Image (cartoon, rainbow, N blue to C red):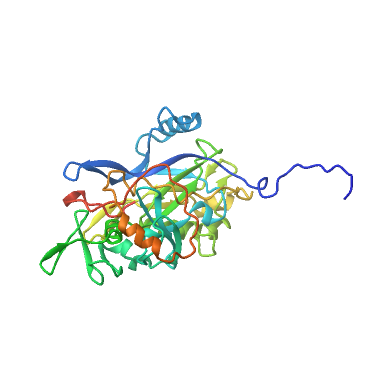
Length: 372
């Protein structure tokens, strides 16, 4: 061991981290109140929505809100943007996600594997609040496509039979002349059935307002996700990359104008079984062949930024006022403790707000989860 004095200027594992803060979040819909259901539900609109950050927000958020309103007005349908980096896993991550009350994010997966809390797994003996690695069945999962569930609990009266949900409550059945209900696990799973959605989170910069932070917008529209992937993929098949060789920091150096336009474009959809009009996200490049001849594109590398946190609830897709999930009984808790518990993954931290899964609304207040 020498006596030479060492000089230190960086910390391993910390000093190499970079972050571009998020300054605002945009929305693709508004919240309306159902008099019949007595709760809020999300409604798609044809423009971008920015909400007043409130008095408790930072000065940066307040300034961004004022500048956005002054520059784009109340109902902008297109924005000139810059993608901050070249990694789509950072600027546009996508996953199946399901949120609920309590800890928020209950399940997240990619169609093959998923991380899901034990309360939503059919296996007996799992710790309800721990997170386990499991198979992701995608659109075939009961939590995605239906409000019907087949219980596998050997001690449940409903074992081997499909349970139905009626207005958020379990329908009991006659067994040997007596009315029985479902076990706590059946009730919890059925109450959350149909709550899983596609969710894509796009991060970008609005250069006409500020270059010192990103803006985020969430979408669960199939058409929007496909259109954004087709344009912004960093693989050779992405059409923006085919034009410019990159997707990040695209602007004309002569005019300092952004070359990417994020817009809401009207499209007829039939996913709910009836014709509907929605406005999914699309990318447009305002360049023709003549301009392309003289275009000077910035060649600097993209920034290093953090990926959006999937535990943060997309407010547009999961409104606040929904029925709380059924509480587990002490008997069920004791039954689970007696079973062997597999090794669990660490549970995610608590998100800032509690938003249970949406229920079906009557009549014209129904909401298709793939709207935005």
